Amino acid sequence: MSAKAGTTNKREASGTAARPSRQINIILRNPEQQAAGGAHSSEVLGNPRTLPQSGPWSEWQKELDRMVGLDNVKELVYEIYALLQIGHFRTEAGLQAHAHVYHMIFKGNPGTGKTTVARLLAKLFQGMGLLAKGHLVEVERADLVGEYIGHTAQKTRDLVKKALGGVLFVDEAYSLARGGEKDFGKEAIDTLVKAMEDYKNQFVLILAGYTLEIETFLLTNPGLPSRFPIQMDFPDYTVDQLLSIAEGMCKEREYALTPATLFRFRQLLMQEKSETIYNFSNARYVRNVLERAIRNQAVRLLSQYPAGTPGRQELMSLRPEDIRSV
Ligand SMILES: Nc1ncnc2c1ncn2[C@@H]1O[C@H](COP(=O)(O)OP(=O)(O)OP(=O)(O)O)[C@@H](O)[C@H]1O
Ligand SMILES: [Mg+2]
Image 1 (tube, rainbow, N blue to C red):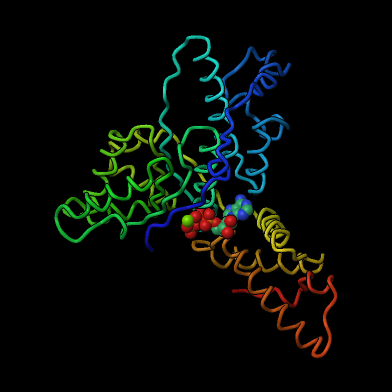
Image 2: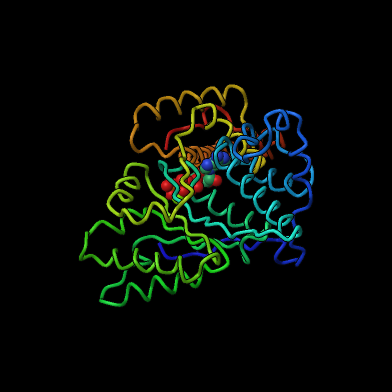
């Protein structure tokens, strides 16, 4: 896979980048927090659903709420939002507001939302004023590692430059340590570490991969963990969460699942989850089943209506027989 740039933020295009308002005050006046004596943000955040419903945060929350589950991600984003708001007030009050380090590690199985969340964070961080551009550059080993001495450092530096103002997302990051000391992967790691110093606060580096591999990778590179203060787990989705994801995907595409179809989908997910414990691809599996169901529905409707046009309801409904494994 070659490196690819992500979305451009609408606010950037319209030049109306919103400065966070004083919405945070609403949170700090919450009686429960006052009773608790204030205000470590992760304590404040126990349940992301209690976060403010209006103001700039609510706009970002809407984006986050399109993602099923992932409460840890939602809480992290709110912590960072709160930190930036308070930093703003501290500056206004003549106090220091230190820049934080936002480099992250994402750990989780296939299809648990790592890439999607990275893309969303890039966009939200741009909206919050943390990143200048808010794009995502997604790379893997082959994009970073070259074929001769010096080539890797050059390739890696070029990609870091491309990511400035946004997020550099390194997928399957553990593969950089695959070949040991003599492998060029090590040169890529060293170059990334140097770039984190050289371009401090100009980009966010996210290393992603499957939990066990990433943990082994961090163990074998003891200098690394402290450079990534934020570690996010992306657990496998439950069957209920996968069904909510399916419903969200249907809604986006203007399709609908009948109760009998949902039941069939549930059966399929339970079977698939138990049969493919180690390589079940979570929400990606749901997306693939749904896309196949949409194709199956098209074929079914054409044969049911050889001369006529199906009604709107028929065009939207996915039936149990459309749901098949992929
Ligand atoms: N929580 C969620 N809510 C809604 N859709 C989701 C969620 N998580 C993932 N998806 C959808 O599932 C698909 C796969 O997600 P994504 O590519 O982000 O997974 P990943 O963790 O990066 O997988 P991999 O490790 O294989 O690269 C995407 O279409 C994404 O939009
Ligand atoms: Mg991914």
